[in-house]
Each structure stands twice: as structure tokens, then as C-alpha cells.
Image (tube, rainbow, N blue to C red):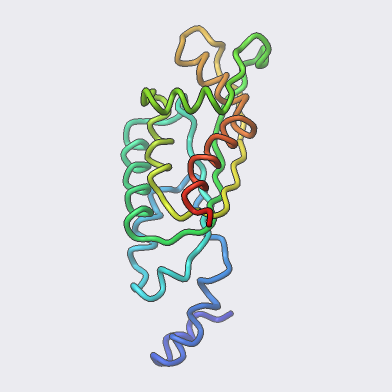
Length: 182
């Protein structure tokens, strides 16, 4: 597709917009700061054509305060301005050099309990859950080395990382997809 032809006139633009924006997954990876400006530049007629995005959520051991602010802004924008049907979420995690043996295994019920008490390291999850209308959610992990679990925060991060593709994914699907069932 040659997007420059879309600028020839309004009729061609209207007839070809779906070719460029519909049935595609817009992948932002770690660059979540690009999401709001990118989608804000689209017209109110073009934005609803986008139904699927892919992004990476940095692990709590690797993120900074400005990452939290950007994540919050992205979730708010998606909630208020988009009509996503599908989300591919890659969650960054960590495995200690000694592995995950001996760390607690979290269940979907554990994450439900943590959601009721708004456990701070999972604040990003509650913001993500505010995005409604998701009919398809794919959760995967990107696991890196992390320091040994000498603190409760690092121990939680390591145990959470071990459950990203299992219990956490199940919890997130149950919470986010429930409201869209007919």
C-alpha cells in the first residue's frame, strides 16, 4: 500500500482508510509514550477502525516514576478515546539466578484478592482493567534476569513473573473479558 495516494482527495482517503488502519495490530512495544500522540493525530473517523494494539508493560523492578505516569495516561486515553477489541500485552518479568523454586505460586484468586486491596506494585493492572470493550486478550511474558529476592518487593516481582502467562493471564482475562460477553 502506498499511503501517499490517500492524500489525493477526500473520496480516495475515505475509501482507502480501512486498508491502512483496519485488520492490523499496531505494536508499540516499550514505546508506550508514542501511543497517545499517534492515536491523537488520527481523525475521529479513522480512530474507530483500529481494533488491535500490542504493547509491553515494563516490570515493576525496571520501571521508573515517569513510566507509571505514561502508563496511566495511555490507559486513560484508551478508555476514553478508543474502541479496542483486541489487546496483546507483553509483561516484562524477572527470574532470579536461582530460579523460581521456593517462591510462592500465585493463583488467579490471589490476584483477585490483591485487586481488592489495591496492592501498589499492581497499580498498573487496575488502570488497564479500566479499559472496556476488550474481546480478545493475549498475555505473554518477556523474562529477564533479576537480582536475588532480598526484599519483599523483589520476592513479589519474581513470584509474579513466574505466574504471568498462567494465573495472572487467567485473572486478567476473567476481569477484562467478562463485561463483553453476550
